Amino acid sequence: MDMMALLFFLYLITMLFALKGKRTLSCYSFIMSLIVSLFWFSHHATDTLMILL
Image: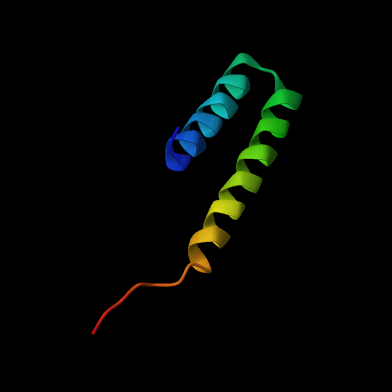
């Protein structure tokens, strides 16, 4: 699964938990989604650019 698709899936699960009224599962899944998002951002922010001039 692509990493961006995984992020959208995790946030979808979070929203579904929130709509179902499962507050603790929604909070935990949001925290997990946020951690994965921050990891993916730091991966791209520190990646070197392959620019040939």
